[in-house]
Length: 226
Image 1 (tube, rainbow, N blue to C red):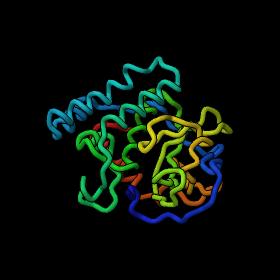
Image 2: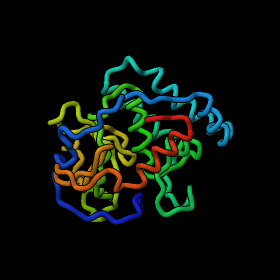
Image 3: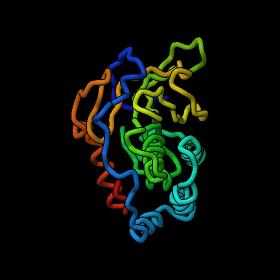
Image 4: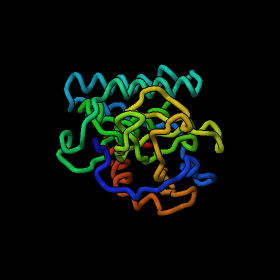
């Protein structure tokens, strides 16, 4: 199932391409949340959606003192458990839509980008430094070890140090593994709030990814300022 509707150029790159050394987001890791405004938004989705959104906010409050490895596990498990894998055309009636965490939990369904966005902002709110996180487009092999079928996919990479092998948070494989153990994934490019990177080098400014800017604006309207 294709979870990214636009085509990406297939590049045979190493996992090191996802490192954006010295060029990462320097913003505060904490999210600014307007609780009253967010409660109004959550109420739009009914009791089930409101419970899911409340559970998301509790995720950060309850796990601030954990180790970063444990935070990764809690965030990964929460999103993989709370969201049904689906496609934008079914959920949003659009070919490609990046949902906010509130929208995804409200609907209870999303595609790979929505899982990654939810995990990314969850970990920021849990105190993980933004420079340790990367949103990474990949080509994912599906159908078993002998399969040649590949789909466009997105995962979240966590780097304990700038030169570390990243840990991969994924909705296709729930176990968090080092990238070296995910031979079913081939990185294509990565991005963060400062730009898009290919082969470890700046390729385009972040404003070229219009859906990211639109996502942040919609989050602010919901009462969440990244």
